Amino acid sequence: MSNATSNPYLQAALEAADAAAQVIRTAYAQPFDVRYKQDASPVTEVDENAEKAIKQVLQTRFPEHGFFGEEFGRENADADFLWLIDPIDGTKSFVRRYPVFSTQIALMQRGDLIVGVSSAPCWYGTERLWAARGEGAWFARDDETPRPLAVSKVDRLDRATLSTGNLKSLAQSPAWMRFGELIPRLHRIRGYGDFLHYHWLADGKLDAVLESDLNILDIAALTVILREAGAVVSELDGGEVNLDTRNLLAAVPALHPMLLEALAYTSG
Image (cartoon, rainbow, N blue to C red; front, side, top):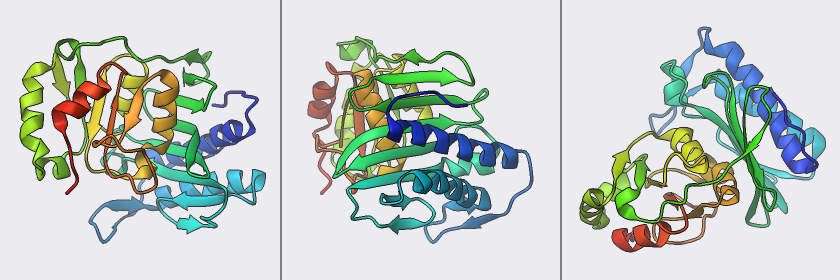
């Protein structure tokens, strides 16, 4: 699956996602070894091989660029252009053989996120969203014609659907009570998680996503996509997304300030 674009960085990211998808789909139905990191999160040889495949594509095109990958860490990380790579975001799902996992590839230029590809290689075929800053956000499944993405126009909390991901840190903060007070004000609350709720937010199916325990590799590409689809994306306290980001609030423009005010989140 590949989608032509005149942006060389985005085209390389799409081709890298293709390379990772081939590795992942080949391995998905076969036995593979699972190891566990110090934080008890699983990792497989498939994660590692997919990251190698991504880096091979990108390094061939842009040997001067830096890399920050989930499996192999940072390389030339002070370069003006830094690729952020999570070869399998959702390894726990991958290990359990359910298809809520994705490949995340983003490009940061001197601290600004400019390209993002989110590819779910086993989600009813391959579902892929991509964006470059100023060029809109796009969706395609398998080899269908790409279509543009746009967030919903919902502008009231009582008509909004909010999806949550990991909430451990939020639950340990003073904002947890305020979150509880927010829930009855919403139309619906769900917990779709991983790539799925971000894809659905970009496609107008949800109106806001909230997570308190993640890292930049999980959401860098999705941040570019969501912004190009019209969403507002920040940390839970309203701060700018950066390499140290550990939480996220993404929402349609009218709702984002309402949710920030309702949560009044602080990390301390």
